[in-house]
Image (cartoon, rainbow, N blue to C red; front, side, top):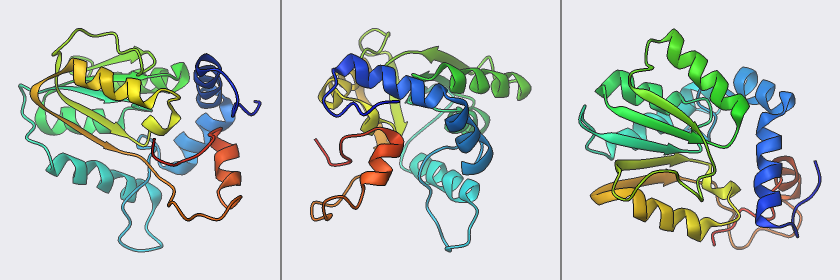
Length: 201
């Protein structure tokens, strides 16, 4: 995969899709990173397993929300759907997992089927800068460490505002670089995940 620092928005999306569909990324995130939760975790100790810390992130976000069986949730950049399965099992609410990677989405669907959660979770192949749902469709929009991949962050936030019901909640996490990071320090990370920067927009 090439560097897309100067690429078009479409090429950024294509390269992100290609990266997350690759067997290397799939193997790394599914087998090594922590299985169904593939985001930054909250660690209590430096030796804690990634999967436990990642699940703690989901639990911490959940505590910030008023979720019930009547809630309709959209998970942007849902990866393998770990958060959606957690919410479906705990609250019996309906969740839409919207994700760019067909490889991750297929694993998500397989895990939902194994856990008998197909009635609660729908998995959609889509770019979250073009959310294929009508205005005021969701009570909660959820995203973990995914928006950083969008070349159109402002458009993502506009889309969230459009599809979120009045009074609804938008909760998200994203890794961000500090303003004073020395030049080049993050370059290996940026190269691996094909980003220009991890700064806020």
